[in-house]
Image 1 (cartoon, rainbow, N blue to C red):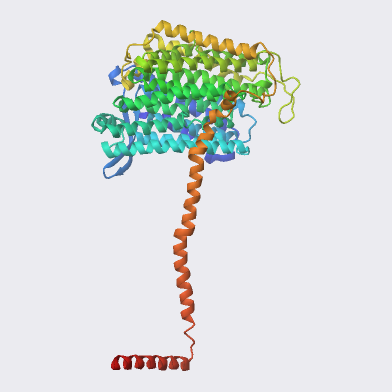
Image 2 (cartoon, rainbow, N blue to C red):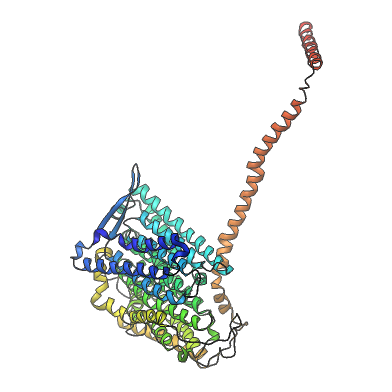
Amino acid sequence: MIASSWLLVAFPALGALILLIGGKRTNGWGHLLGCATVVASFAYAVALFVTLLGRQAADRSAEVHLFSWIPVEQLQVDFALLIDPLAVTFALLITGVGSVIHVYSVGYMAHDQDRRKFFAYMNLFVAAMLVLVLGNGFVTLYLGWEGVGLASYLLIGFWQHKPSAATAAKKAFIMNRVGDVGLALAIFLMWRHIGSTSYSEVFAGIGEVPTSVTLAIALLLLLGACGKSGQFPLQAWLPDAMEGPTPVSALIHAATMVTAGVYLIARAGPIFNVTPAGQLAVTIIGALTLLLGAVIACAYDDIKKVLAYSTVSQIGYMMLAVGLGPFGYALAIMHLLTHGFFKAGLFLGAGSVMHGMNDEVDIRKFGGLYRKMPITFATFGLGYLALIGFPFLSGFYSKDAIIDAAFGQGGIEGWVFGGAALLGAGITAFYMTRLMLLTFFGKPRWENLRSTDGREFHPHESGPVMAWPMILLAIGSVGSGYFFAQDDRLASWLTPSLGALQPGPDPVLGHGTVVAATLTAVGLGILVAWLLVGRVQPEVERPQHVSAVVTAARKDLYGNAINEALVARPGIWLSRALVYVDNRGVDGIVNGLAAGLGGGSGRLRRLQTGFVRSYALSMLAGAGVLVGLLLMVRFL
């Protein structure tokens, strides 16, 4: 079973190949093949999980060598897979949630003329992500890393006839390249100081690397993680990625791309364990991003962008957890898994709402939809409750555990990071309750409105092919947290990959106090949302005159403006300066030399007349000059 684990990648990769090469001939059944390949990969992942589960913990890790990939003198990189609990856990998430999203897409993309191409790109996305998490070294991971970047570019810009979609795809691609450079430089440093890029050899030799180099590797890995996971300061691409079809948003935000950064930090745990400064940097980035994403989500009226910034915030919780060290890795993975269920369910629910509302995304134009879309309302509501950490739903066990661990840091760090996580929980409850109230409750605000294309609104429930995936994800939103947390089930399973779950320093607050404080913060967030939008009839049009804080949040806390001022504009100016130097300097010298030679040769050519008398006269004149010079020398 383990020896054939390459089939996990082969199934979706083959599906993408057939659909892309087959072209329009596969239009009639391409969507079925796209779903079947991911389902087959999920079935194989389940079988692989059962195989590992039947082994002793110490025997749950194996490498599968496929072929020699880069055999260049001392640089020997094999294309091999690492099959261990962490890799299999991610494979189950990617293929399991991915299968549900693929099935949902059959209904969502039913009327799109390029549906076959859409499923090809989705298969490519899943295959690349599987390479990323199954590879046995950083170079193989980098291959999947870039494959995910390519697939995301194709899917975000799938509706390329929309200028906003094409722009969002380019923005995501370019901002991810910034993080990718950091990851590539980290790999170069590993090769330079350790002589290998495989996980086993890098982790075994990292203790012999100079402290400054280890810190540089850790920070460069963090830069790569920030790019893929939409963390500060590279978070601006993630909300714009909502321009792609909604199933793409669900796949990116729940099961694939944005989880890659968390996987990278967790997998590279032995590197971060020996550099406390690197761990602190990860924790700071996570705490800052979870607050930044939550605050911005409060100001948006676009249902998908609210969920997008929610993802930015929730990935921030995961980054905060992995930054806490060995006792935080398993907590981060648990929240990543539960988040995969409820965030995918929320995005699919948003897609169902859009499907019934002529693709409208403005929640101010919704209201009262719980009567028209009862299944969407129920499944979306369970995802909402799981996200805000309602007692005994999945988020209660995963996110609240991270808040508890943050306070468990002890000292000033415990107060700062724990306080940030607690504040984020309250803000999360506010913006998600606001979203829930404006979308499903209150008076219908769509009755006398028309969509942008002039059609009247006739909200209706989605068909079974879209409803059943939402129901399955809602079940995961309810029960997955308890299942993973019971008796530290997930932590024990991941021990061979991440090490044993270790207690942190003496906590600044007790567990019971943290739970009570978290529930209080969540309750206050719900109450404030109800007071502001639940008991009043909100305006359909967004108010133009608002406070400076709301204005800043609507502008993404000036994240795009800062990136443009610090990176984009200086880059443009530098490019223009280099072009000027190239045109006037390098090209000027080359072209000037060529022009000089050409002009000189043209003037010299005039001396060649072809007349013998002219040449004889020139020879006589030259002889006269020569005789004159000799006489001068003789008499001087």
